[in-house]
Image (cartoon, rainbow, N blue to C red):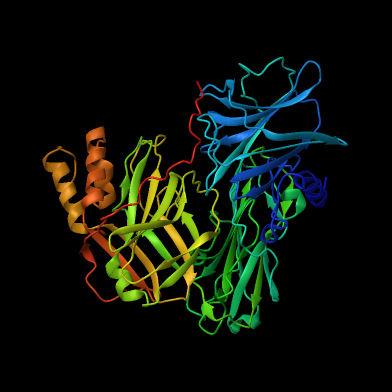
Length: 584
């Protein structure tokens, strides 16, 4: 079934349930749950009622049961599931259940499959239901802003009841998306010209993960400055489940420098070293996302006399079935204009400096690191009228599991800039904030990342390699100012004192003759030493990067900078659950 037909079918069902206002018209989202696009999900949102409508389409083959649901980080269990199953009377039922740590299903006493409908058209079975973002059921997944891991599984057996059914099966899958989309973002591009960067008939390798890069030179007309007004993904229908996410980077180099027009594996040995400068993000799209539109006041500049004309597309292919013979020509379509908006949009890097001074011990279920943009930096870099943050892209490498940026003014915590409690490095996109954030001179921004290193035997260091770690929030804002990097690390003096203590009092094989990385690697980690490192990171003064776009630091002494004072933090968020609910 083609996607327009899906939308029509979905609207027929939703028309009786979901009152869409003018701003929400056609705000129906779509994602393929399997690689081949045979199993799909569509959904719509009602923020007033805090309700989400789901419709799942799947082939009506001889499955006995089909499970669709959510888990914290994509594991098939433990997880929250909705079970569609056919009993011995050939009656099809949807029930609310959850899978325990062994994959065994248990029915919820509180069933949250509201408005269940099922119909069959040809060989496609469709079922729809709705539920609250937070059902207040302790066994139900709470749908939040940020990333959601969607899991599914199906089996051929006809079952008499669901209790005790094990969800473990080879016929299963997982995809990531953001369910709670921003509905107040334009979906139609403004009057503009199109600029596309796409890969060209890539023979996708038969491995589960591939990163493919393509470097191109912009057309001659971009010697004149343009604005990027909006962008969107261009993906062939047959590859909707294959293309996981895409990013476009500007190659940061002198305007006259030539960058090789490479096309191949991003990690290939034949990739020219000079293409490594292609790292300033222009666009980021992830599976399930629609186009990204800049606010009417501002747009992102591209081109001009001081702009190196090379950009790079990076495509992440997700091929868990390791199919061969797949060919793809996906990419990003920009909507650009030489008629400039009132303001340039800009990007500031918040978080941790890329340095091995920050480290994460092995075997940690959760270990936090924080990077600071201190009040002393914003005081001299942000104009009196402030800047407005409208978008955010969170970034870590492989061990990151949660990211958030907090906002402080005169020691009082304001609402958070952004948060993702189920973050994955394999799902990164620039997201429009539902509520823009104004940052004034003297404000502080603190970005915290949580990491899980349970599968690692050695220390994980900060750095550029994929096996290293990062903690970054790329905030998109207007009007553009000269501040480009506002990040921190532990001060050199504090780290030296820590290593000295570990040598003298903990008898660790640490020496000033060794480098930072070697000293961290020499520590034999135990619970007490891990807790000590946490305390040092929380209390030690900072080494600050308060950098201009030129790479130079703003005037000031940025070593041993005190961390931002918190006088009044926000209270923990309260769930608005109805009183008296009890699962017992």
